[in-house]
Amino acid sequence: MTTTFFLVRHAPHGLQDRVLVGRTPRIGLSADGRRQAAMLALRLSAEALTGVHASPRERAQETANPIAEAARVVVTISPDLDEVDLGSWTGRGLAEIADDPEWRLWNEDRGQARAPEGESMRAVQQRVVGLLDRLSRTHPDGRIAAVSHGDVIRAALLHYLGMTLDAYDRLEVSPASVSTLVVGTWGAKLLSLNERVAA
Image (cartoon, rainbow, N blue to C red; front, top):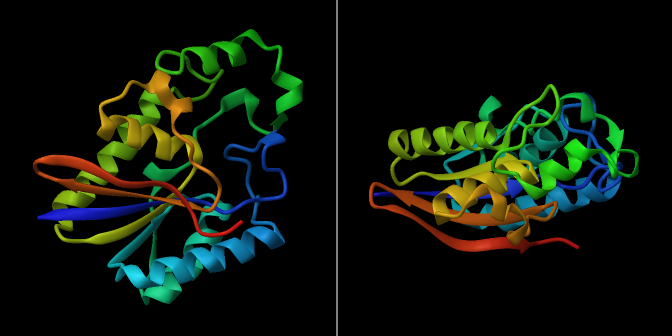
């Protein structure tokens, strides 16, 4: 028996690719993000979902809600799907920290680095993989959408693909994308990566 996970990166917000919003509260989807979330819901309505889990962040919940509504299920808020805790980088502009040595280390040695006063990618990987493994045991034959964040999804996929965290930039996980992963007692198989259903 296998569990199929549809790993969904939340749709875009207004600060996308300019600010490290991290766990900043009240960052919701942009108007275009809401449109893309509706398209995600339409795409996933064909998948007979048995559950929808979402990060506690507002942008993830706003992406998950139409998916759950189309599937006629209730969203489960899962802290293990939360955004990386970026510590003192939270809310800072990408241009502002471009010359920070710790930021360079974070991008060059993702397997060992930790965000200042925040979380390591190793810790992120442990929590998200722990959740997916638990769900695969408790929901055999389940079909679950997990709405999360780019680096969190990358961390999970790298684990199941047997790749190191330093390979994080080899996987593209775009906003409003779906990556489909099957997990069973025999291991895991990636069926699709970074499927874009909206532009």
